[in-house]
Image (cartoon, rainbow, N blue to C red; front, side, top):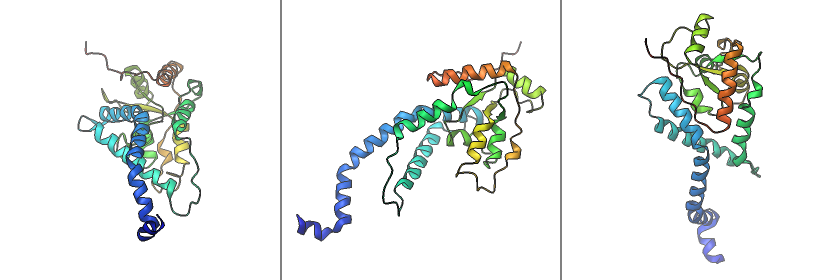
Length: 227
């Protein structure tokens, strides 16, 4: 009734409505996160493999989900009279369909080491942060044969059994030009040191990309046992 509404004011009335709808809203938000959880889980496990067993993948996933919610608040910031309806259910798959397209990889495609991309974007020595923050990025874990070539060509030092990831230079430069990075004083694109891998390595990356597009699980490369 109008008298009851007047005593509480519009804010109280809206908050009562929010309280009623909140459980349903929470369920829908959870469903959205569940839809993309595979990307978060894959990235978090890769971080653990890259950094060490002291990394808690579950904690990384929780932090990333909270960060997503914080970023979503910007959709409802003050001053915006009309909130555009974003196709959130299609945005990520569409991006991945483009970025994970094997036809992107040609004999002239340039790649960078994940460690160098991390430094170039101003993330310093925080290994793995890039993969959690941008799980849509294509990354390829170099196998022993790849690492031998990379070391021989002096693109990296010998690292034994540690993981080494290759990323597409174009993807990193696109990130650097985005709002998140372009004004950063820590941007160091000269750290990228791009290179063109041999055809046999590019072919392996194309197969890896195709497997990811199909939603398959790719086992991490293993160094051969000592003779």
